[in-house]
Length: 40
Image 1 (tube, rainbow, N blue to C red):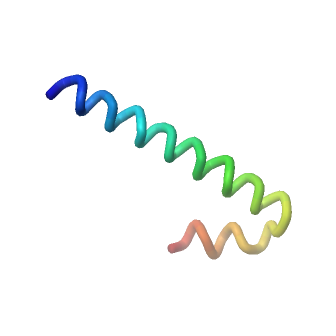
Image 2 (cartoon, rainbow, N blue to C red):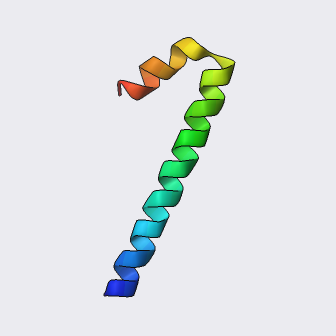
């Protein structure tokens, strides 16, 4: 069970990193839209 939870944590970290990169890219393209995404 520990390895399974460790894998899940790793996937969550990867998803979080991808989300940060995506928000950063959107922020670069359209700074005003980031606030709308973050507020959801």
